[in-house]
Image 1 (cartoon, rainbow, N blue to C red):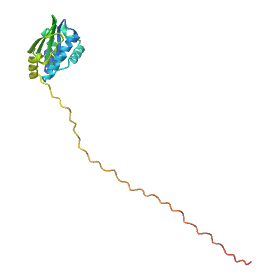
Image 2 (tube, helix red, strand yellow):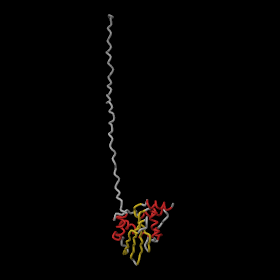
Image 3 (cartoon, rainbow, N blue to C red):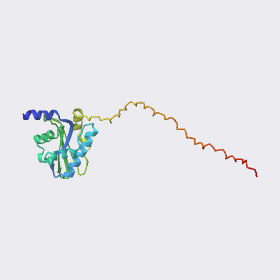
Length: 196
């Protein structure tokens, strides 16, 4: 039963790419995070669908993995992290400080079968950023295999306007004319027949 479940999980894998720092030697956690963010920016510039590193770390933490460097760069471990994240591929970053320079190796692996898609390596002077040119091979390979999905803004569909019947027009209220009561004729003086 377990192979079937794994097969379903891989089949349902998201076509996005996760970027994880899987090995650090004399590199701080913050420097590793910066390398991951710079790699994501370079991959997005090449139109690759990439998950934010912080989101990948949050999801791994929910699965009980607090630090991907626990893999020490071992391929089987890194691929298992990618499978747990249900992503299509993972870019594993190994970074080390050597005599004031930083060595950065980026390996892209397909999650479902463990195939290495591409690899780039660069030696950077201290404080130099990782730029798109440093990820040329990885970016091209991933852009072909995992292109960014263009997400268009939802289009509001206007419902046809139903004609609204005009409210019935009430008969105008005619003001009531109050007529004064008819005047009584003045009393007629009675003529007396009496003689005086």
